[in-house]
Length: 294
Image (tube, rainbow, N blue to C red; front, top):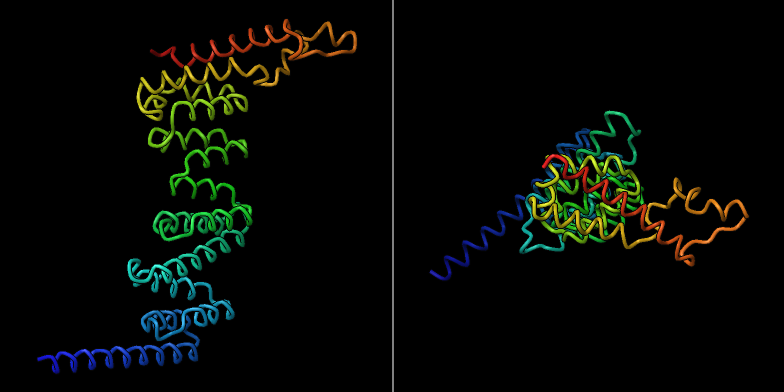
């Protein structure tokens, strides 16, 4: 029985080897015939019988991006993450590079660019766990794909980083969308309050509208969390005497000093108190706006 079992395994291994060789021949024949997609499918079916990097580079050198994508996806789908973690990571990294290249190569605002961005994000949604998180973030940053970087950060659970990235770009609405989707799952009221305070500085009207919307309570984890977040937001606004860069009020707060060619700020206690007054007024206005519907 042992001999039969050993013999059977040997025959199975030989059959696999023959099968791999057969797929390689089919792949070479397809390349000669100019059918890159068929060649990609055959190379993928050959598995380890086809050296990964030389096969991938071959498609890359020929400019056969679609064939390369097919080969990489097919290999990735067939790979076992538990048994081949390094292979899986390498395949995912190659695919990420390819998707990023396509997104950068397409002219912005065109259907091709929209399709490339959609494909990139679908890839992230399906395979983010197989990618090196920091290496992927670095790749997206190097190619200037800030919005996709924020999207990837959301997918891998770095919600605060995603909101920070959107704030840096002035994408206040993007911050609110992130809050609606993720904040109540992973962010503290203090964190959300800090983000909202910065969003308020950038666009007070839009931030007030978000907080007074029906979806704000759900986005922030319920009425109690919304109330706590508003409290933290108001406190943040009150303790930061330089928040909101009093451009509009400076002419009043420092009017006398400007007339005499001098400006005194934090060192002047009276000036600070006036600034705090404006902060309280703005905080109160925001709180009333956010709670006016109940």
